[in-house]
Amino acid sequence: MLIASPQLMQFDAPLPLQSGAVLRQYRLAYETYGQLNAQKSNAVLVCHALNASHHVAGVYEGQVQSEGWWDTMVGPGKPLDTDEFFVIGVNNLGSCFGSTGPMHDNPDSGRIYGADFPVVTVEDWVNAQARLLDQLGIGQLAAVLGGSLGGMQALSWTLQYPERVRHAVVVASAPNLNAENIAFNEVARRAIVTDPDFHGGNFYAKGVVPKRGLRIARMIGHITYLSDDVMNEKFGRQLREGLDLKYSTQEVEFQIESYLRYQGDKFAEYFDANTYLLITRALDYFDPAKTCGGDLSVAFQKARAKFLLLSFTTDWRFSPQRSREIVKALLDNRREVSYAEIDAPHGHDAFLLTDTRYMAVMQGYFQGIQKELKQKNLKQLTGDERP
Image (cartoon, rainbow, N blue to C red; front, side, top):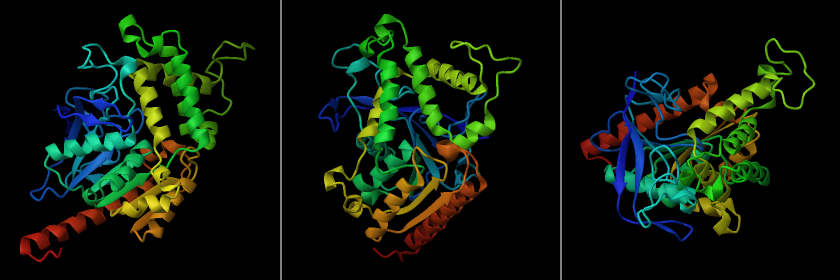
């Protein structure tokens, strides 16, 4: 069993943000798994999606049900094998799981940031992650890996720090959000900001939490993560056990209603409302082709990494078509890219599950990176590496 140990790193050098704001000081929560080799060449950064954190894999000692959010992917003998790779998970700025965010004190005012926490972008997160790697003595990543919003970070790494990434593994992601996705995010945000307990984002001082808004936001999001097939197979039109139709507009009668309310209640107990607003905005803003006249091929001229992209046929939130756009842009630039489109019924959530074909592709790709590293390290030892 992989035992995880959360760590914190403090940064006192100001971090300029894309918005023009500056974080004068901040901290990042992170975890590492496996061992960094002597050449410091086997590091893999795992970037998290909306409601995840730095706790990627393993369990916390003495805690029941504390598995990392991608424990199926990362660990000894798993596709991203921690017996071979040094894996790093970082909690993004603005999140609510240890890194500096709205729940923390603003050093300039001495008060909790709340609604005053600056807007952060994918590019800001990548810059902060790069500073963490600097402190860990890691100059180049063997790979950067992420699913969904994490995949956007992986893409951004290849554009912001092209010489620091050897491989980018991008799962169930997109080069930007389409109008429908932005619309879902906006509806979820409105649910939060119109909650009477939101208080303009400064609810901490009131001693309340806008749980109603968080519940609705999570329910909306959860619907988009599942496919129609999965929802029908799992719930269909089943009523809650032992119930008959009550012909009521208020009762929870269908199994799917009960499930969504359960997910919403659970989410409202641990997630921060301001964090939800910040992270969904970061999703909305990500668009590497924006500064290139919308031409993704031009944007990816900067990339130097090798790429693996994966998508899932029933993922309608980040559809295969969006991954193919990235593949085309990479091929236009003669980048080395592999692409797998997995016929899986689980919708967007498939990237967190254990479809055997998906796992086989991931394992095969990381085994290829492992062989590449061993050859590179051997050449260094024998003095035969060519520039």
